[in-house]
Image (cartoon, rainbow, N blue to C red; front, side, top):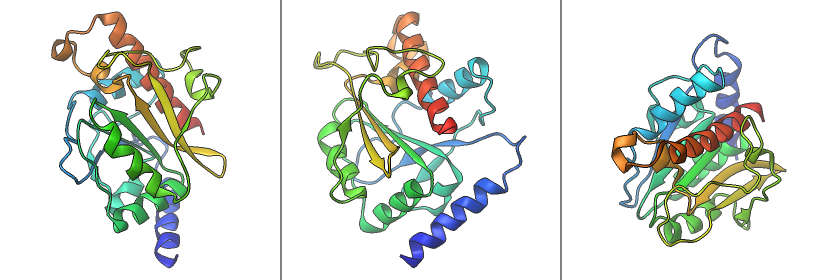
Length: 218
């Protein structure tokens, strides 16, 4: 408990004393287990650029990488993780991630196809007894600057299942967003990587911008 309290206070200190004109930072989450946490290297930089140009935000154009168990995690109000394979959080990492989320942080996990069976049990370990729940289409995250009345856009087909957004709520606040069967991160990548039509990439970027806007407004 003492460790968690210290980490929460550290997070509050960082947020409170960050100059208002200093770029806000988001980060890519590095995790253990063998999954390719480093997939989609152009995704976050492209999403940041889109948010800065279209939402008038001041996000650092070069998102860093942060490890789950690092105290540096508390420097970033928003962290994104992706991959195709295994994910493992040890007890220290779970404690750190839990303190980060309780202190105001936000985790977005995006299944890059093949991550689902590994990430679900790990996310549900963060707050024992709490399950991922499907987020309704009426939730504000789908209705920021861009309106998605039917929820997540479908970027890549994979198994042909409908895209779904799941969340973990802590004291009424959405702290974890898990996006499944949509592949938003692929849509954020450079166009020549996946050869997606521009209108498909634009849907992915707009949904990503909604997530970022929601996090910084709530």
